[in-house]
Length: 496
Image 1 (cartoon, rainbow, N blue to C red):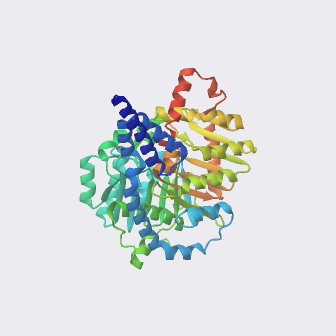
Image 2 (image 1 turned 45 degrees about the horizontal axis):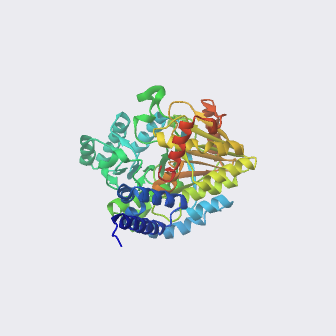
Image 3 (image 1 turned 90 degrees about the horizontal axis):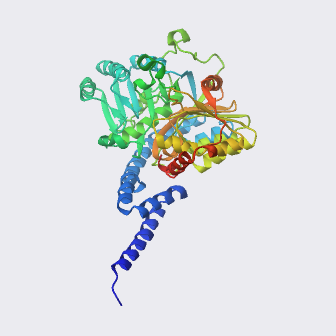
């Protein structure tokens, strides 16, 4: 028998594919993601393994363990308080019960709920809120730039830190764009600045790297909170960019509902620093999770200078903060979106810049359209990612065939992430309708149950439609070359 190196190579290749396939299957990810990784590693053994180790799930296991320990540490601190607060609000309706089951904290009452549809108004109120801080200011952001907007926020933080207020800033290491001088100035003033999950040198690969915090959170004195789509950057500022400023949506609220933002910030702070800020002490805990305003009188609309006045007498706004991340076995935001979409009876209006849905969310949206629900999607003409745009287009035909409407927002960039379901609830947050937001990044959303702000968001959606073009043509009629590119991009959907 003649010895054949070719046969040895073929046997080794088969053994490699079988072995790596078994290894990846044991991760028990979605079938689509599992097949995508197996195909990549089998076709490109060396490159595929490097990519898998760099951005794949195995590299996250130790970090997931650390974060789960941090989460449990925060949960222990909150358990007694959570049980006491849960009895104060009746959980009416299945969605509110689902949110309570999925979320860290139960729904809470919110006051002074304000919506922002432009960056400058939001940043004005953010600087004002920081300036009124008496005990602490907590910020967690994906992107924080050293531009005019960023320096304005930094100046406000430095002023409060010098006044003796505890100021903590947590920025994702990939999205951070702060100069050494700015970092030195903040730290010298007493601002605690930390970077989430290292790898600051890999910014160029930020759409590939997983385990990022994509959240935008500000909590002032445990009583006033901000969240939504706006990072700290001139991209959202008409003062800086004029008509090219991004269209986005953010929300401010006051009251116990802000505690969900505080708990969400605290989990990543404990993960990053190991410091739970002394929450085990009851007095300290009460300062971080107050049940009374502690000097925060609610201003009137004229003082705020914005579009959304404080709630009128008798207009209670129930809000809930939902957070999710790749460390959790239950993807809370994805699960809640699915429940909310399938509950729609009259309307389902969705705004997202990145639309690369998983099979369950896509089927839920199409099913709503088949049931006669008024389904409308508002998407940008183009984003900052060619591959996301290409993959997104492959989902349009199924939804158009089902009876959904797709509206394409003309420039500037549409960056808002919102949902409106009937008159029952609205969602404002950081999560896009894609696998990256639902399963690979740390995200947070505010769910507003009924109340006047649901109607405000619906009116804003209708205004946005005036700047959008309704899509009529099926993607199947597009040129062959573009359809091929789009189909290839869809193969990467689990990682986009």
